[in-house]
Length: 274
Image 1 (cartoon, rainbow, N blue to C red):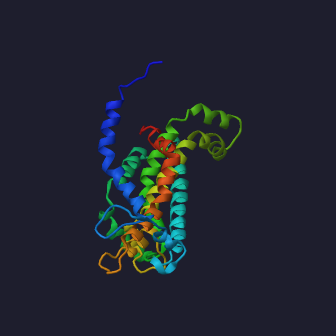
Image 2: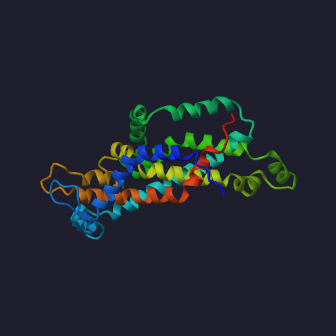
Image 3: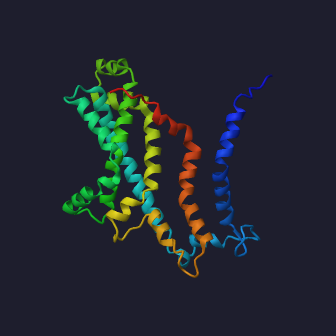
């Protein structure tokens, strides 16, 4: 059996480019379970004391409260994005709506604006409706910023579903909602799964919105918690402990990506028909 070695140069180049990142993550992992003499990068002992924050609130403060808040924050955004995107994408794909192309163009324009250009307007709106400094307000803003991307992606997936499937259900007497729920949604399940993963990864790492729109709220997400743990000016600052908290924060996302990376790539397979 012959082997194809044509890809080896590309793999070697990619490994060389990725080597600094791989080394950085390796040292990050090693530093969370080892001790090193001052001024040395070589470990001289194994320890689990850097992970004591999991059971000892006096180390960095309670980590499980922010963890549960982050899970609730992420789950809420995923549900909103999936619910609105799956219905709005279907309407834009299947219904002969007036100004449909104008609306699709507006969605793309909305997604093009960076957050910093919208934050003042968002702040004023939340102040007006009484949702400033609340978890609900931050969830709605974050979900709203993700919806243009989600709607456009789901619209592309619906475009790939043949009309014949839907017409067959209508001719058999099923309602439009039943056809959408029982015939169309199973066809776009890969897109829904990929969009849910993308929304979860994006929401889990959100820092700016909770920091700006809920600066004095009684809740704290892990990104804010990690920032409060960082205190390099302190004489007793434990950088390895900070690395352990950071690794704890990123492990769920790393696990999600490692397990579902193939399905995550499906988000680009829905088509781009307008």
